[in-house]
Amino acid sequence: MRRLTRWAVLQLACLVCAVGLLGFGAWRVYDLERREVDYSSPTRTLTEALREPTATRISARLGVALLGSNQRATFELCAAQPLDPASFENAFELAVLHLDEKRLMLRVPLDAAHLAHARRNSNGGCLLLGSGLLEHGGTYTVEAIVGEAGPRPTAADVPLRVRILAKHPLAVQDQTLVLGLGLLLLLLIGLQLRAAAPADADAADGVHSFTWADINVDPIAALFASLVVFGASLVPLTGPTLTLAKGVGLLSVQLGLAVLLTRSTHGVDRDQKLALCRPARVWSPLLRALAALPPLVGAAMLAVRLIPSTGEAPIQTFVSWPSGMLAAALLGVFLPIGEEVFFRGYLYAALLGYGRFWSAVVNVIVFGSLHALQGWGNWGGLVGVFAAGLMFLWIRVASGSVLVASLLHVAYNLTLSMASLRGAE
Image: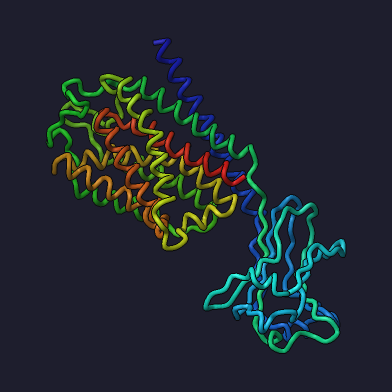
């Protein structure tokens, strides 16, 4: 009894530490998000800007933003015209000023060399003025220097817009935070695996030898539960902090539905039905999961590299900001626990009455579809999601334990998350 109590205390300590790290991670995401700047000036022509009170005899103010020190900033000019040299070459100059210190930070002439780097499409063009790490915070402005003669007539009435982006880069503490949370959750799952009751010893292949009556899970209820999970994942919240909070809610929904809709019947308890049990032979399934990790990570990275995308997926836009990348890394570490209990535990058992093959097919499709909206356009990433879902299901079936599949899922997501965070340095 004393030994079991010690293990229970260790599990509780890991859980408390994990919750504490997640709370600190949420604060860190919020702190990064509130200091990020995505400023777009009102669209107006040079003629209109020269009439404003901030204009001078030789310049017009196109945009202004308050930026912080140690932020990585990007300054960009966009026009409702492709910025063709015939209209814009030497039409005016652009200057980035630190208004508080009255210091010139950057000066960009619209010569042929600079205009050659403009990005153009049917809607217009954009020119990167410059980017870098800011040593001093304060008010920064983008000015059009037109000189005594004024702007060239071909450019004077073209609508212009300035965009200023600024963000604090991720730090080593962010990587440590994600790694620490992932390792704690792996330890917590491992402790639960040790404490769990053994799987059905009558199943030679590690799959519970339940009859349909033993499972006693209504497929209609499973369909309803899947729709609820889909609905929870589609709640329209904007911003990394709220998205992270939504992830915690989604985890609660997945775990809650799996537990509430699974009943103990015919002498089989809820943990056995959800496969929250210890494999009959522990080390063999664990070694399989460990061996599956490197090829699974390699296949995911290879799929992203080889399969062409047709657009920027929402998740790619989300992680383009440091706060979004950190939020995505945290979500990737703790959400697998809910996904494994719901998909490989509850949903797989709910559909076993139709046979293992169809239960597996539906499981992989529903799991992949849940991630489809966030990865739409990035087809290599979606292929990786479906392949990972198939691998997690195979580990769950081969071991008879969702806990083993959870270990692989958390380790897989943690590996990808750490690779993304290191790549963002």
